[in-house]
Length: 305
Image (cartoon, rainbow, N blue to C red; front, top):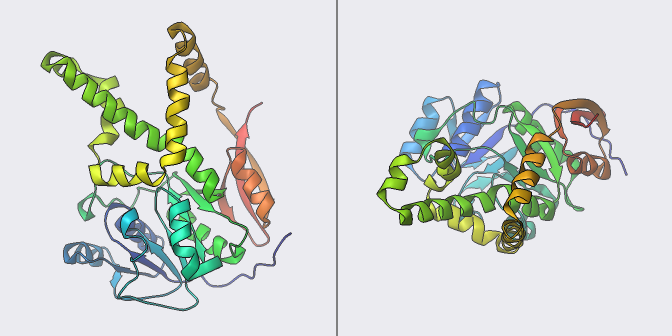
């Protein structure tokens, strides 16, 4: 079923949490000409955001983005004044637990989101206005999500330079367990195993070890909250990994190489109506939205020839 979506002026954006992700989003939106208000419990983060053109205030409206750690998500708006018609979204790396925590308060006004970017650094000193450029931004479209609000959040992601991937929260959590949460655990295991091999092994470590362990330089509390918040899908991903490692090594190497070498190199432009099944179908094919038009969105799907 399609929904009529009127064209309206872009609403203001409020960002709660002005560390690496929230601060980078606020800075990118200011650079794109959006009106941005921000808040953080850390005075230094507020000062840094203000220097980048963010208005600092406890009163938020329009699209309100929660850019706080997962354990703080449910109470992120405590002490703040949020407009009753505001759309609420977040940048959390797990979606089903956040959906469960926020749905009771906001219902269809809540639109779960997760930009697939960031580095092992954290805090307001790691802010980069170009962080979202070209990144995939998973945006959850549940049966009770209000489509006009989903589109408003999509416009925020697009304004920051990202490409929007429509998903459900369950689909998101299954996918990121395989390509984000499992790699964090693998990086931890690789680093710990190399340390057990002794100082010589660490002294000889070069590019493959550096790339394979980079993400575990992240804040351990952040990584722990992420994998424990998505424990079921992450455990399933670990089971699949262990089954792969049990294969004969030549078969495993050949299979992994084939996956990397077989990634589609091209894209095919598509237009998708403002319709939940059509948008989700785009995401499930590996595509993304990169432009909002009047009665539909424009995006791309992998060109598999």
